[in-house]
Length: 73
Image (cartoon, rainbow, N blue to C red; front, side, top):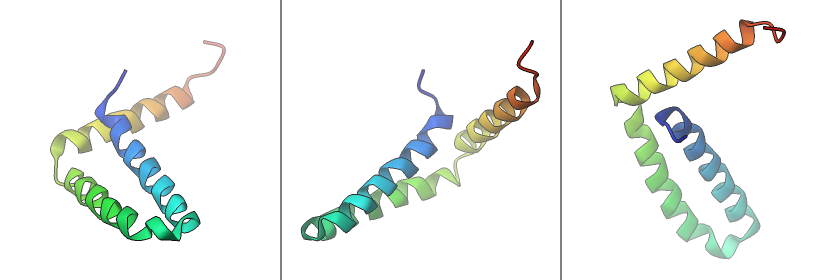
């Protein structure tokens, strides 16, 4: 199920993949760089959006809580 808490890690994964592709294909570097700049500008807006902040806090809270519950429960 898609949720805001998955968007930021997905953005980071796409950025990493494009950076790796750019390193392997220098002929596409200029075009990829333009895309990376646009992705990073969208990603920077999330820092200013309360819903993203709340979603990430909720996601981290669930991860912490689930890690504290014994597997035998």
